[in-house]
Image (cartoon, rainbow, N blue to C red):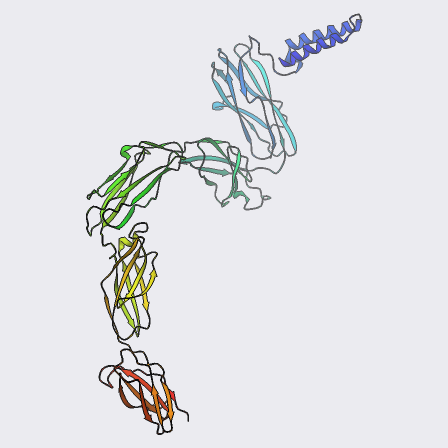
Length: 563
């Protein structure tokens, strides 16, 4: 209609430009008016496009109206789908064909391999045109999709098909075989086939490269082993809605779209998600709480009702639940927080337990979380010395921490450090961060019996000092180096008293590598002796316990007389 109106306006314009008294102008006006009528009545004869759809014309649509593939590679065929729809109230007869295909590159085929048939009112017919550029290269190809349609007499319509063939040949098909959806994660599966054969000119190893397209945009480029023909790829966290995927290989065309609907359902999550929680050793009146937050990690809404959060198996009735504002709708932007409170009821060495259950509305899935705690006003007695080892005068203590206390990282019973005592005196504080055991080394311990004890340092104060653990150190350290005074032919030795020693022995020798003789024993009450030098040049002092010389004889520093 637009073309015909333009021609009529052209006639009016030309008519107004000529002199009405000019004979030539009259002839020109007459010719143009005749041409205008002729074009309106016979548009196809004039070659100016489709005929007017008057009241007597068929009423239909073809989508799209023609197609341009743009630049394409020679090799394998390309397909474009069309939809023919009867928009009127009469049954239409139609025929489809390809015209003016001088390069023999196009083919049309409809549903059930039919190119003709009847189309009822408001029904549609699917057809596709295949472009196979074959071995053409750097050439423009075109043809017409010819549609003859009507209720009585068939009217003919022509739609342009065109492409420009260029670039390297394409040898392979790629098609998506299946798509699986897991929540908001989508996995696509596709295959590749090369019926013509892989061209030796294409470098080996590039057939495993694929471009993944999501809703028409490049999503990812991945590489696979080019010895296989089927592949898969997972797209994570896909937005909710209808989407389509396409795959293109190095040697193939872009595959047809594969549509998938992602619903992005709600996903339950809770923080913290520990299945077991230990409140610790607590006195009556101390009421710690454990806070929980439920999140929806997916889409949509998850509902938590009054009966969906419960405490069960609470034999001591030692727990309560603080879950306000139920029922609640939980979305990705609106989590829900509630808490469990422990109320120690009776002093007992056994843990007081309970179980928290949470039900979501996602298939009625039940989630369980267990709690325990002990009511004990003497909660501090939860660590002790398990054993001790002695090496000379070094004592190693092995300290054990109660299992439940070791787990209590956020309770009153959380152990932060351990105090070490020996014989009632504080020695040192050692830190504690994790685990059920600690060790402590005490160096330079004097000879004899000693009592060790430990005490817990908790987040809110000190625990009890446990019962003493006795340790015997059967070792005398050598005496300190004695002092020496020479007076003519006599030598006087002085030394520091040694804790635990019952006697001292003075040894002398002419040769430090020869025989040493004990000149005599001195009671522990003495710390010096005066001796005749005679010919001896080397002296040493040892100490011991028991009846000499059967006691513990330990050597001391050698004094070398060199005069």
